[in-house]
Length: 91
Image 1: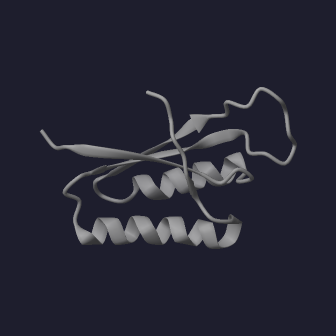
Image 2: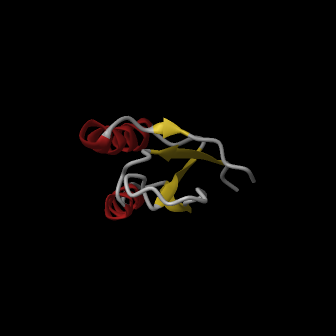
């Protein structure tokens, strides 16, 4: 059985459609899975994303190509929409 690690990231103003695009791109990388987190805010803010963030799961022994591609995809969107923030999610 392969050990996997999961990380959580957010850009608070990133639109839902862009989050979906990021997840679609990440899922194309061998050894990577990704998904969306629900928005947990109780009040509506037009300028805040409809999504709480995304999760990314990789094999702990993922190769350098996998990690490099993952970092490039996140950097691409981070350069256009603002820096990714690591977030804590309760299990």
